[in-house]
Image (tube, rainbow, N blue to C red; front, side, top):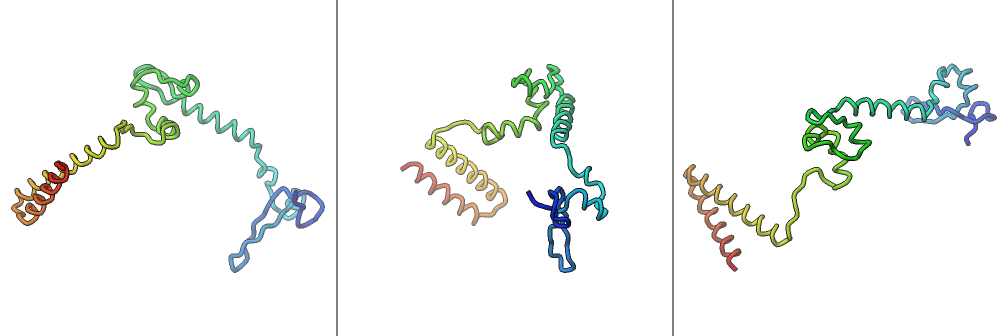
Length: 165
């Protein structure tokens, strides 16, 4: 409990931050009575009832959740939050933006990439790289950039040698 810096008797309920000419900040702890005397009006208004604020925010969130409705099954996002289950497959589309943070929190990502063994993933990446090189080779040949085409051909050949062994 900090005492008022002005009267030094009552508990400080307000912190006033003052900046001097050099921009240096100093905090002044003030009780409600001294704040009124100094003209710091609206002290009572500065003490929000945290329970009322939370209740207001919660009611606003529920109101906005009730407005988001799946066009197919008619389920609202608020109903989903209560039930914990979606009504149909179209709910994923209807609630996409609201579901993303939930899915990210549960699974660590919002895109399912599937499961593959490490060797399978490595082979798949090699195949993709070879496809990319072949596409670049064809493009270079069409553009008659033969130096680039030769370099790509050599890279493809080395890749083929690596995958054969």
